[in-house]
Each structure stands twice: as structure tokens, then as C-alpha cells.
Image 1: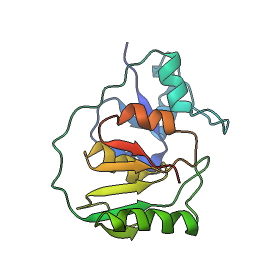
Image 2: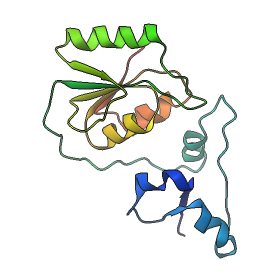
Image 3: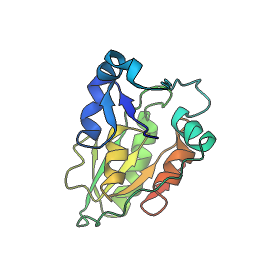
Image 4: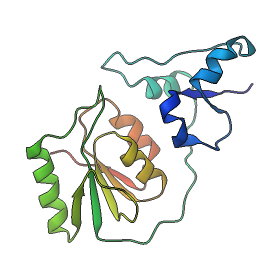
Length: 161
């Protein structure tokens, strides 16, 4: 059995080159080629990907990647998309204070290239950094904390403010 993952067309670039990943427009055009198509929808209380992994008994295995050189650049990924809430100014200032006290130069919503750590809400920059082996910390404002912790047990932490 082969499982394919389809993404919104605008987000396909995130997994470009990965096998069994296709843009939604290709999936829709060829729907009859697949035995079963399931669209994941969010009910605002359960994370759809986490629920699919659990119910299907799909093990999570993220390959180890070499750790990038540690730098003093810290990026705060403050912008969330429903059901994840964006960080408010107070939360951003708390994160800034914590990481500046650790010696980091903090940027809000900057480019993660060359970052020594990325801290923030469930977002593309946070997950990209974690997959690259960059130290990350999730500020939980959504419903994906369990998924994040299971994906990144070694390089990710949870920062409750």
C-alpha cells in the first residue's frame, strides 16, 4: 500500500522533492487513481494530523540530521494560523527577555537561516527549524503540542509563559 500526502498548492514547496507528496490540484485531477482520499479538517480541539497518526498506528520517525553550527541568533516565530493563536506583545517581550538573558540576539519573525534557536507558535518557521536540527521551543497557543513533542523529542522543548 502506498500513502500519498497532498498539500494546499501554495504550501507544496515545503516538501518539494519528497516522495509521495503531491499538490492538491494534482490529487483532485486524478482522484480516481486512489482507493481512498481523506481530507483532514480541524475541529479546533483535536490536531488532525496527530489524530490520524494515532488512529492509524503510524510510527513517527524523523531522521537524525547533523546539528548546525550554534549561533547567537534567535528567531521568534510569532505568527500563527488558526487554530494556533499568534503571540501577543506581552508574550513576545517575555520570550525576548528569556533569550536575551541567555545571550541571544533576538529577531521577531525573521529568517531562520543561521539561527541558533527558533522559539514560537506552531508555524512553518518553527517546524522547518526543528526538521533542520536547530534547537526549537514551542510556545503552546494551539492544539499541536503533543504532535510537536513527539516529532522533536531531542531538539524541541515547550516554553509555557
